[in-house]
Length: 475
Image (tube, rainbow, N blue to C red):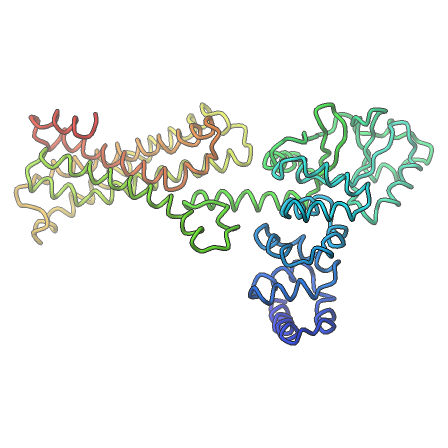
């Protein structure tokens, strides 16, 4: 199949080079919009503009619905203002609202004026909601009837709506349009025409509020295994519905956002066509990390006079191992907790329950890593001394104890931070994914190195210099 798409891509490029709209239309007539989006993504800017210009409005609408936000914005810019209203008409209401939100005020006003009043009012209503809320991703297309309507009336309504709406349920409402319940389509089939909907409705169904965050919506639909969920406002009125395909998009978007944050960049980088602005987004994280590593270096230098020179040089050799192991252990725990928080796992939304699970694991890992580090030091010291990398006067046993205990303390401290930071950021209203990115890595490096040298000072250091060192590192 992939080879077919690659062949289509070559044909599309050839048609674009000749500006042959007829040939292009025939080539793309049977292409799935998702494959068309793949083709669009690998075209250069000029070819993309040509493709959007030559496609008929229905095909353009299908393409736009499959593009990500950055590419969709670019495609909308290439559509002639006179054709925008026709393209918007072909889109699902939630997709149309997304497209309208990316237009200039003048374009948006022009397009809305060209649409029928009912459709224009519906889209203006959707534009009032935050695009990452339930109201921003819902579709107002659904089937809703009074609770005293009959099965026959419901079947007729489903038939009328089937061409436009994705019908999974018939919703029942009261005289004030408040949601009463819902009826599964199979219940319509097995009951007689005169059966009132109220008698076969599922009362008190799972719902979401218009202002609920889209991630919470996705978690609720996944938890209750829902294909569709109704959206209500504060007064309980039915405003729309969210379908499973919207949830797939949400899950992909939220996962991508977390991955970018955890990698030390930001989701808005995807929307930046400028390499300079994208570089600035990454640099603000990297430069912050550079400051953090500078602090680690100051800690290492601050302990310079706490040890005999040969001992100090030997200890410095193990600093990268301490920093790396501390950072890795912290990332492991923070990633697990962040994932649980993202999926709405009840046990992990409570810090006490998460700590009760992770702390025993940490108490196993810390001494095991400490023993492993001690073993490496004990076995490696003779080799290091034979190559002159460690002075002959350095005590093998004391060095082994310092590295082993230092590693255990560093792992424990970094793991505790990995547990704590996601909840701290969540409390502050910041995305917890930040706690698994460069921030936690750099913080754990600092804490791990500091813990290591404090332990080493107690075992190998000059006792009379400890107060001076403590003052230098701010303790």
